[in-house]
Amino acid sequence: MPVHESIFNTISIVSVITILALLILVIMKNTRLKELESDVDNLKKSLDEMDEQAKLIVRTDIELNKAQEELDKKIAGLYSLQGLSRTISTTLVENQIFKMVEASGLQELGFEKACSFLWNEKDKKFTTYLSIGYTREETDLINATVNLNKAPYLDLINSNKTISSVSLQDAFLKEKITSIFKILSFIASPILPKEGSKGFLFVGTENMDTVIGEGDEELIVILTNQISQALENARLFEQTWKAQQELEKKVEERTQELKSALEAVKIVSKRKSDFISAVSHELRTPLTSIKGYASILLAGKLGQLPEEVRLRLDKVNRHSDELTSLVNDLLDISRIESGKVTMRREPLDIGAVAADMLDFFSVQTKEKQIQLSSSVAKGEFSVSADVSQIKRVFINLVSNAIKFTPAEGKITVSATKSGGFIQVDISDTGCGIPGDAKEKIFEEFYRVENAVNDTVKGTGLGLSLVKHIIEAHGGKIWVTSKAGAGSTFSFTLPQKE
Image (cartoon, rainbow, N blue to C red; front, side, top):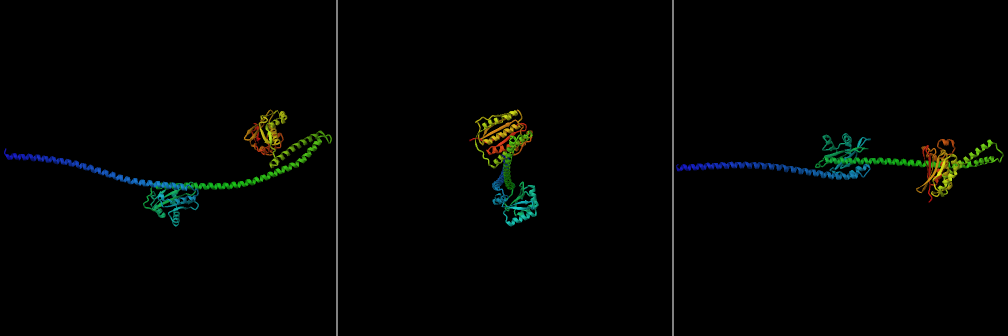
């Protein structure tokens, strides 16, 4: 092979190898370029995602700042509202409530203007009770304008819904309200006490930077609820105060009437006592004469009397004794009532008085077959009392018990100590006393309607005299009884010191 062919072949091979090498290098560069392009795309996507995340973070931060500002505003408003609520709750005068709101202001809630209106049902118009941020002339003009077109405001009250420049859908009404009250943003909330005049509170602002939100509406609703409650409390207090004044007036009038009636009763009672005393004294003289003449005739000093005359004189004598006893009882009651009888206080043994009663009534109880007994030991119960008067009390009560106790019945006398007093109980197994007669039996001339009283005569003065004697000693007397089941008369006397 010639030398030049050999060189050509060599060059050809080298060329081919070089081309192959270049081709491989190009392929490798293309592959690397694609890889780089892929990395660039991935990096771009990552940068886009980071950008979105950054934007999200910024938006979130802005929203958080707004939320923080809203929260700070709401907290400040709540503190302000708490102070305002505490202030208006300290008064029970209706006009003072709005004056306190006016004095406190609503600037801390974000409103520099406010008005409050209450509906006057009688005059059919709204009356202004609060004005903040307006002159007197502006307030009068607003009031007149509101009353010219009452319907929207009455609807606000009747619907019990709070409206604002944000929530109000009626654009015409919104524009009209902002024009009337000369503000840019507003909230109107109803004032609804349970009783009395209802109304609404209007708050507004001219500040373009003030944005009203749901939180502001909630604060105003809380405030109007507080005002409603304060008005309710004030009106209830006023009603209570008026009722108290009326009651005091009636009590005073009734007291005067009772005083007058009491004075009249005292006068009548005194006249009655004076009359009884005078009549009793006047009756004593003829009674003494009648009894004296009857006794002379019965003694036969004027000659023997026919039997029929003697029987009638016996009746005259007996009835004279009964009438004398009645007169004496009336005189005693009259004297005790008038304070003319002084109880001669001295030590008195209740046991000894009870023993004397057993002996005094022994004949009567034996004839009627009644068991009379006493559980009061001598020397155990001692009182400070008028001996003769207390014996009259025992005689009256025991004789009554004997009268109303049937044969083979029982009468017992007992005593106990209670708080510086001695309580004496005289119990029987007699016919008892109806419930409606327990208080009346101590009245003068009152007699219970029963079979015994229908057959046995009496004056109805015994228990009244007993009551006066016991009360003159500083004690009390009462009866415990049931019809058909016996009675227990109880009285108290001061224990001997």
